[in-house]
Amino acid sequence: MSEQELRRKIVSIGKKAFDYKLLSGTWGNISARFGKDKMLITPSGFEKVALKPSDIVLMDLQGNILRGKWKPSSEVPVHSLIYKAREDVNAVIHTHSHYAIALAVTGQEIPVLTSEFAAAVGHKVPVTRYAMSGTQEFAKEVVRTLGEGKAVLLRNHGVIAVGDSLEDAFQTALLVEDEARTFILASSLGYAKPLDVNEVKRLRDAYLKSYGQEKRRLSLRF
Image 1 (cartoon, rainbow, N blue to C red):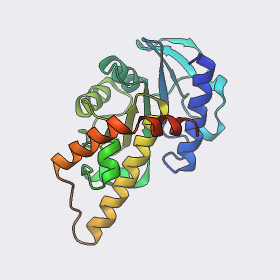
Image 2: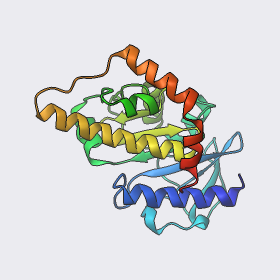
Image 3: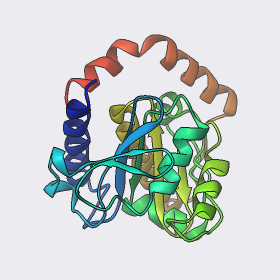
Image 4: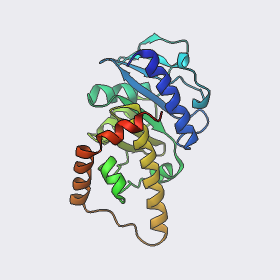
């Protein structure tokens, strides 16, 4: 994918995230790996619905701006460190969705409750220890807690979702918010029963083996 195509896709994903209420105001950020050791990332202080492809900033993973007229997101350290730690990750989305934040401020991880979440994400969503966002300490804590997973709750802050593409990361962020809502609503009724870990693995394995065409079809909708 060319740099211009990737810029357009980041803008499109940002608008979809806003439409789905994963982002609000100027909060949140989106990036995509470009080549092996570069990334494109949203600028600081912009509403994602107002972004243009030319607003996206090209950087190397050491934090140097290679192309762009705006200051990049303050969360550059966490995006770059994730790309350094995870060769399988090509996109990172940091959201501020309401139900997930409600759990993040209480330090409550999201269990695997639905078959859809088990298949597409495949693990409970852990919560980081608190660290000031935008710092190296925060970035290291996110990478440590994320491990090999697809999403993590940021204590008192929000969500990080990763994927092998922007579409994959977006779908993960959306599913995290849906699962957080389900957990809160089910808990209000008395008890939210997680799926058995063996069933989660079975559903995840089946998804990875058989859902490829559907994943490609999803990418055409952006």
